[in-house]
Length: 383
Ligand code: CAA
Image (cartoon, rainbow, N blue to C red; front, side):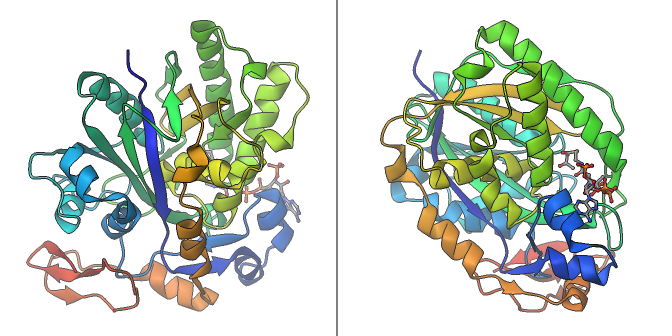
């Protein structure tokens, strides 16, 4: 069987952010609660003229060459912030990036987990189509609402990955541990733009699901904790990933070692939660910022989507991976952001598109190549 995995990875986050100590002061909270208790420093903010489609197109743009265009015949779009109940968000991206007309496009949903399901589906697909490439995009806008306990754990961003049968960044391994359960820890009914969440309960379910997934992964694969050099966890906020690693280390009777997760958390601390994209922003962070040469090293991954589905899986980093990373692109994306005041953030947050689908032009605040310019006759318009 050929090797299958991640060939390239780029993420994107909008050009606006707030500092969490500013949010804490505005909410009458000790800033240490957000920066130490939750482990978050900066949070990306979605402007009125961006959405999951523009973020996705921005993330994928640097990966689209004449060669990839020719080879991509499957676009998997993972999100829980869908902009249409019928049309896949990936179709707008397909159009904006002028992808091949012979390309399957579909949107997948299961909270923050669906990008991982897409990855495993692509794994099987590429075994049967080893000369093709798959474009996997995860794009989300995490919203809990102003003045809620979840507010400091919002954020937004997209990740685009090219998957292939000759991966340069991560070769996926056989054997996973998967657990599904009907749990109401976090969900978003179709009539709401913000999630309903039982926050403390969601953190307990996350940790219990991790332990069950690990047990089944360990049994299926025969791999032990010590066989993994680094771990990447879903990052709703960075302290959650630290707690996950504490739990797994304890279950394996191995002393907790922050070094095994520290570099995964660096970008997310500056972005916030990007739901489906968070785990893979973590992977980019680890590969780009860890000084350890990860060549031939195994990484363990825990993907968690409330509701809930969890999966523990693993991959091995090929030699030469450092030549294929997007460090300077990502630095530029993070450094270019303007810091909003809290009233400016609240204005962006409460901006809405009309519900009757009548003509509307969005304020022109984003400088990137793709914008949501407005709506006309129920149709979203991009430029
Ligand atoms: N200095 C330092 N630390 C402080 C502090 C201070 N002054 N004040 C409080 N803290 C600490 C607390 O001790 C606590 O740490 P521990 O959990 O280690 O004890 C931490 O800061 C948070 O404090 P609280 O638990 O009191 O915070 P809260 O109740 O206001 O809300 C939350 C926390 C429940 C995570 C809330 O932000 C939330 O609901 N977030 C959204 C849900 C979420 O992210 N769930 C994660 C699992 S589900 C998932 O992963 C899917 C997904 O993406 C949503």
